[in-house]
Image (tube, rainbow, N blue to C red; front, side, top):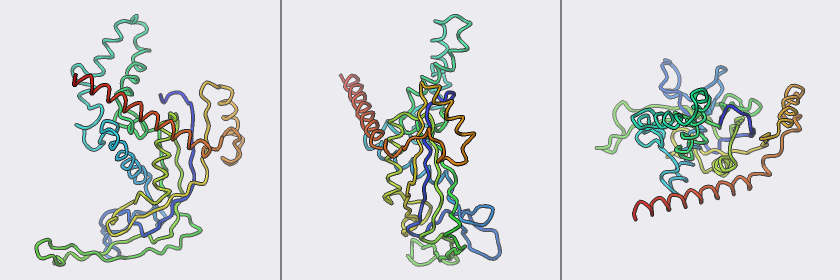
Amino acid sequence: MFDTFKNRLEITGQLTTITALRISAGRSSEPIGSDLPVIKDALGNPLIPGSSFKGALRSRLESFLRGINLNLAANPAIEAEWSITNQRLNGSNGIKEEVEEELKQYPEEQRNARRDQILTQKIISETDLISRLFGSPWIASKFQVRDLTVLSDNWFGQYQERDGVAIDRDTETAADGKLYDFQVVPASTQFEFKAVVENAEPWELGLLMIGLHQFETEQIPLGGGRSRGLGVVKLEIEKMYWLDVNNDPEKLLTYLQELVSSNTIDDISSYEDGKQLKETWTHALINHLRNNMNKSSTVETTQNS
C-alpha cells in the first residue's frame, strides 16, 4: 500500500483569518505578557500547526460520513469504537491469528513473503473509510499538512490582547480572581498552506476535496474561542499538482529526472492540473459511498432474516 509509489497530489495556497484566531500555546509562565499566548514559531511569528488543520478537517469529514453510516468513520479518541481494536488485531482469533492460519496453505518458503501482504489486505478491508485517508494506529496517514507559517509580507507583528472572565454558575457573575487575558492573531492575517497526498484512491481524493471545500467556504473554524466568533478562516487553493504513474515506469523515470533538474515545482512538466479532476474524484467518492451503503443494507437484511 505504501511501499510502492503510485501517485502524488501536492496542494498549495493561502489560509486567511476572517476573524481573530486563537490557537493557544498553554498558560504562560512569563511574569509580563498574556496569560494565554498563541502558539508561535522560533522567530516569534504566529503559527498554525498542521495537526490543528488536519484534525479539524478530519472531524468535519467524520461527521459527514457518520451521517451516512456510523461504521464509515471510527472515533480515534475511543479505542472501543475503533474499526480495528488492539484485541481484534492481536487477541485470540484476531487478525494476526487469521493470517497465520491462512499462511498454512502456502509452502513454508513463501510464508514470510506473503505474511505482510495478507496482513495489510485484512487490515485495510476492516478499516473505516476516514482512517484509510487520515490514518489509524495500524495504518499510516496518506495525507500530510505542513505547519502553516505566516506570510511575512503581510505580517507586522501586531498581536491583539483580549480580556476573559470565568463565570460563577451559581451567581451568574464574574468569579473572584478569575479574570484573565488571552492573545489572538488578528483578522486578515495570511498563512502559507501546503499539503501532500500520496498513493490515494480516487474516492479518497474526493473525500479530501469535500473537506477542503469546507475550508474554502469558511465552514470549518480553527482554534479556541469559536463560540465567541473566533477562528473563522478561509482557504484559497492556488494550485493542485497531480502525478499518476501507476503502471507506467517510464513516466516515473521522467518525473524523477525532472525533480533533479527543476528549480521549482512549476518546472515539472509531469504534473497535471489537479483542479481539473476535482469533479471526477468527487463522483468516485459518491459512488464508493453508495456501494458501501448497499453492502451495509445487504448485511443488515441478512442478519435480521
